[in-house]
Image (cartoon, rainbow, N blue to C red; front, side, top):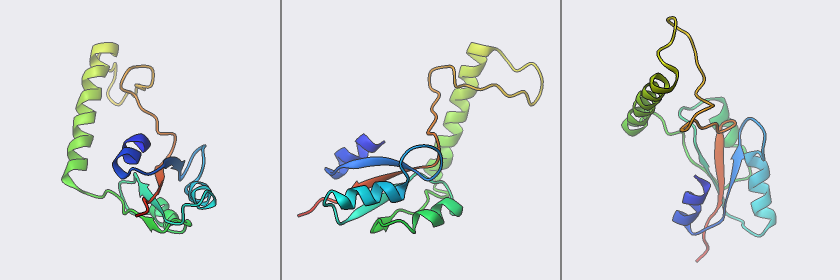
Length: 127
């Protein structure tokens, strides 16, 4: 995601995490400021307002994006990913043995772990 955002903005982008291991958005924003980028933005990957969205507004970034919210594209993507995971799970693991049984998809292809709530710190392009 950071690479795609960097290409789109033609500006350096780094990954930060509102929770979990890795640099925090405050650390990433401060690092961008330290390297001579006064205008830093946070592109959040949050679905709804709440604790993390509020916390991210208190970083040294000049701009912070709003949560993705209830945009129909987000709901469609979530449903499509659910359907893909259900098909993959059935093909690889077979159907669940009991109602409510949980199986983790982490061992197979298509499994992604963001390691926390992600945000990207981007330096805005000058000129």
